[in-house]
Amino acid sequence: MPEQVRKELTPMPVSPSVSNSALSDRSWFGNTAAAFSELASSRQSNLWLALLLAIAIARFWVTPLPSSFWVDEMGTAFVVQHGADDPTLKVAPQVPASIYYVLPAMAQKLFGFSEIAYRVPSLAALTLALLFIGLIAGRLIHPHAGWFAAFACLFLRDFNFQAADARPYALATCFTAASLYFLIRWLDRARWADALLFAIAAAFVWRIHLILWPVYVLFAVYAVARLARHDTSVRWWQAALIFGAIGACLVPIVFNALAIYRGAAAHVVVDEPNGGALTRALKLDLVFPILAAAALLARWLGWPRPSKTASADAWTLILGWWLVHPLCLYAFSKVTGNSVFVSRYLYVALPGAALMATLGAAAFVPASQWKRVSLLAGLLLVVFMGRWNRLLLNHSGSDWRTAAQQLERAAAGRPAPVICPSPFIEAQTPVWQPDYPTASFLYSQLLLYRVPGRLYPFPYSPSPEATSFAAQLSQGDLLRAGRFFLYGSDKKVEFWRTWFSARPEFAGWRNEQIGLYGDVEVDEFARGEVADSQ
Image 1: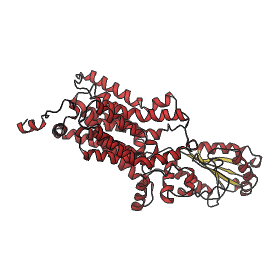
Image 2 (image 1 turned 45 degrees about the horizontal axis):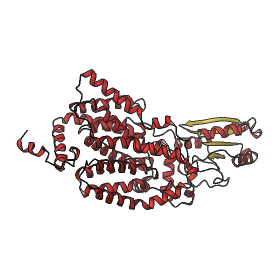
Image 3 (image 1 turned 180 degrees about the vertical axis):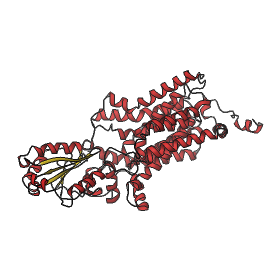
Image 4 (image 1 turned 90 degrees about the horizontal axis):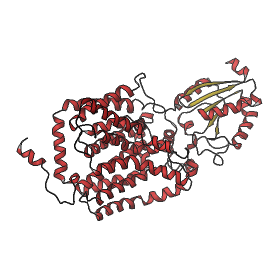
């Protein structure tokens, strides 16, 4: 190595109060320069890694973009097209409480309305998040571990789901990863520019989704741990100043969250979690197999055990990112009785699981083998998880678009009554009434994917009021029409199909399923002579 480069890579002496993980700017940039020098010598492996990553992103993130919206995405379209102040959104005030909607609104203005246009912002956000995750892995684990961490993320279907989802979750993952990256840089370098970037990114996190409050616990845990260990030259008063500024920016969000919490019970969509739900949320089915595979590969190839172990700050941040959010939501659900332990609310912790798997693999992978192991991981990902038996991947299990199209074909130009159970849990008595408007948030699917005929809004769950209304229709409009359709989520349609089939008014009527489109079902009831005339 030339003498000048050797001098540049030699760490400068520092105060004993600062650990080796945060020595100085010279140490930070020296390690980066050394990593770059090694990367330059293996350019071909970088190209293969980049190619594999591009194929995986194209397969898992891009091909689902044209798919039909699922329920919550139709809610996004309603907010963008009708505005956050639409009176029908008052029943679900948590839905428009996000800055995220600015992005699909801009996309619609630029590209017009389409599923692809609405989802492009999430695709871009998760791509940027993946970059930050790779940089964090390179800083905390090994300069070449970023590739492996990226592939580990893509092994998680819930992580990939965010990229083609017109919802705030990819943006939340992006800003969380960015906040942590700049927090690490600030504590490493003690520069106000990094502190400012951290504060700005952190101030946005809770504005993206109200369920993200545990992320601030993670920020505090990591910062306090490093300050307490004297593992940074940042002073306590400086940290208090930055975190105080973030807290001041979040005061309006606190009041908004508390106001919405008072009606939280009306928005609960899952039961209280148990130990099994928590275990699944921690993605142990990713962490343990990667750990075992790395151990077996090292034994098989006779690799020496790495002598360098991860630093304390690496363990603090990665364990925190992996555990804090799921544990906080689990505890909140148990204590309050209002379960928020929903899989999509836990997406922000998924990079922590991928980094934990990478950190576990680091106990067996020598520094010289990271790229080879990453290439292997990328190949396994693309070959065995690509589902290459189909051209395009569906984004979700709900195909409302095709269901609406098939209902229109079945109507054959002769519109008939259509029973439409709402897919939103808020559509229940007393909010729901028989005359509830279909041009509303609770029936977004009818505005986005239009169907012919006279529409009858039904509630999310059956109720005495709903069955009374259905009985009136059975004796009146439905009987006179001679046929009618059921259109909605399969479980809702199944209930009402059974209920209408038992009615004496429809004895002898034909009842058949037009089709099942993911978890969206279309059924038809028709009087015998009507069926015979078709």
